[in-house]
Image 1 (spheres, rainbow, N blue to C red):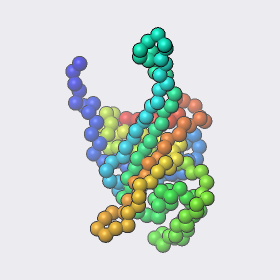
Image 2 (cartoon, rainbow, N blue to C red):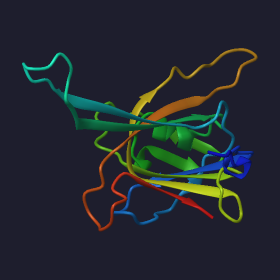
Image 3 (cartoon, rainbow, N blue to C red):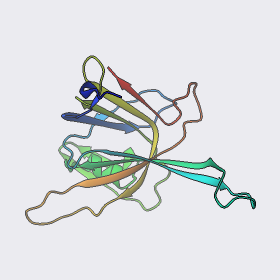
Image 4 (cartoon, one colour):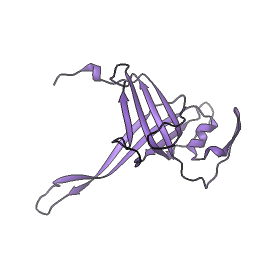
Length: 180
């Protein structure tokens, strides 16, 4: 099989937008997260159930029993709006008028879901070379330590889990990638 270097994807710039989940596969109000460091990481993982009959020494089938999806976004711009998302707080806990804001962190904050869109310029093989990845229903899974140190950037290194979108129609129940 001959190689095709036009199909090698090398993203040169990217944009990540995040907003509150509104409804199935509908774009809500999404905000650019600004500068990132270290790239965005998308990682599916699979867990099969191995069918192992007594008559064989090896499994004869691997039936998918679990799939999980993660999206890791290292955010460099340390506005309190990003801290609000990183701490799993509702929008009402961020008060004031920019740039003078206050974030109140409540241990009893409820479920929060987000929509995330990743646009990678030069990251697709379509006409414009752009790849747009839309993730419908995400939840904050973990946040790395937020550093406050001399001569270092304050970052919100967040990992989001991507949930199954059970409403709406179509086969894009986790996400949709489009090359344009």
